[in-house]
Length: 121
Image (tube, rainbow, N blue to C red; front, side, top):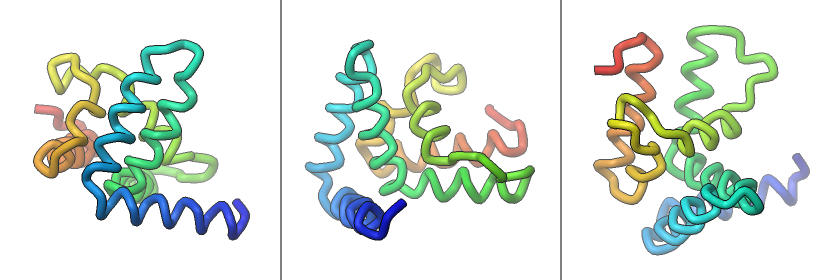
């Protein structure tokens, strides 16, 4: 990743962390794009940005480092894919649907933490 690209991602992350409206718009765009076979990649990119801003990518990277071998593991990619898939622990809902509120983000963070130990309930 170039310094210019990293700088762009850092700015985007900071904007999403401080601007609830922008976060909501990213989430809306992501959800709309995920259901379109022609635009799924855009939805996953938007989810990646949101996951970075919410700290979920860092959380998963830390979990992998603590529990296994992180070599070659792309936490941002894994999290964005995971957020897009229906999750049995959420009654079949997609985790992305929880990210619009602080309580929802905490729920998803807790679900990830519980998954490290295998405790989903």
